[in-house]
Image (cartoon, rainbow over the protein chains, first blue to last red):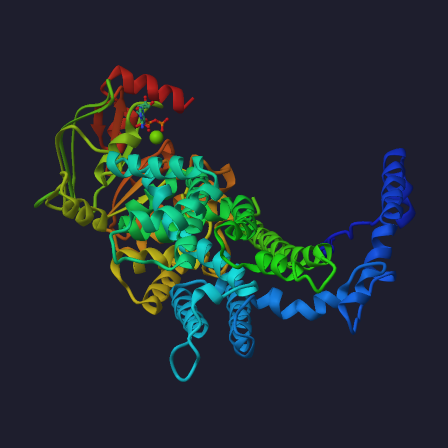
Length: 357
Length: 245
Ligand SMILES: Nc1ncnc2c1ncn2[C@@H]1O[C@H](COP(=O)(O)OP(=O)(O)OP(=O)(O)O)[C@@H](O)[C@H]1O
Ligand SMILES: [Mg+2]
């Protein structure tokens, strides 16, 4: 007699019914009730935002009655998004924002990561900056002092993280290196920059740096601000990456050495990818913090999205609609940061599927 | 016999103040198979790791195919080109597929074009009889399969000498045989091998000479027949009694 051994399908996990999830035991019942109570508490906010809101207004004066003045947001959207960039040239920052979005989307799948993607980013960044600047092919020149709004926020966040990352890798490697000079230099950079508040660093970059530079040298204020943000991002990323490097077992390096893989190629192809996979959550955290940190550039007079919003809301013709502006700007920040968060979760799941042990 | 493949002469090594290797000398001819055994902590791993400079010796000379291991990076590179190594814990690259594990080192160390590297990787994966696992990641394979991939990865670099550091001691018993069989196949093809192992059946069958180490010294070197049946040193005898129950 033979016993047929069919491979059985894996059992389906059973989902408990909804009422059991919500009221199954004392704990979840309490949680459900508290949540409901909080939702009820939010009702006035909902009234303000939706039912009493004013969606259209022929004159700003109409907004003095009742709820949220979304009419203001509609009227000032272009200003909040693009700042004081000349209005009839605003297709340029719009195109740049679109390019950023496309480049980010293209960069998401890990299988596109490689030299070509880095090259694409370099070309795209140069093209974006050129388009913003103008001054060629009949495009009106626009100085960085007139750049503003969302493209500035996005460019500062992306470039500070993107430029900061290679420095971070060097700092992290330097801090672990056996050569005393590079180790000391790395430790010094990391500790000094980490010990300063970003606001202070921005002041140094925007006000003190021009005084320190030799006469005749000028660096654009936006450029100086970007340099400060990059340095700040680099040291935080460096410490995260260093944590990842510590998690790569010694045997990985030994195997690579035994195979005769040259040191730099080993770091790039064997050590770093593993180190970075181990620190996706803290890297995500740093990326999100840096996106929000860009809003601090306001204090040195760079016109990012938040500054543009505040400036729009201070228009005396409108009844100071700050709340509405902050809701809009906050929503954009939230969308960006939550997007980063979702992406990181997806990446991490992919890594775990590979590991399986 | 001409120049030996590996010549170790009066090597001493310390880990800070602790001497791990004491006056170790050993010559290994091309095509010769050496098994190294001895109690834990006797310096077996340290000895073979000195042969590809994963560890540095402080006194004496180590020469591989006529190239002496010194500070010279060029020499170290040349020696590592000739010497493959298989580790106790496999040390596969967990973020790369099996195929990439075998292909990428060729690309990085030799500049082999990707196509050729992958073809070669498949050839050696077939040789260790797991070509069907090429697209998986190391974490998805059994220990025995991973160790065979590690052997294939080393072979892809066309080594003249293979070093094995307890290749089966991290494996479940049922997987030991598949790895040992692969190594026997390699020995039959004439590979020069130095194997640290406690698999005495393998030693008896494959080794030309068995090296017994204790306390950082080579105590005895003998052909398998003499080693098992007529051990000279009392330390060898007591070690054999322990492992052959
Ligand atoms: N990196 C190191 N630093 C300091 N001591 C070390 C180091 N590596 C090994 N040792 C010591 O050197 C001695 C020899 O170690 P080795 O790993 O060569 O022994 P082994 O014979 O391979 O032992 P096992 O059978 O346990 O693998 C041991 O006492 C060990 O504790
Ligand atoms: Mg050992």
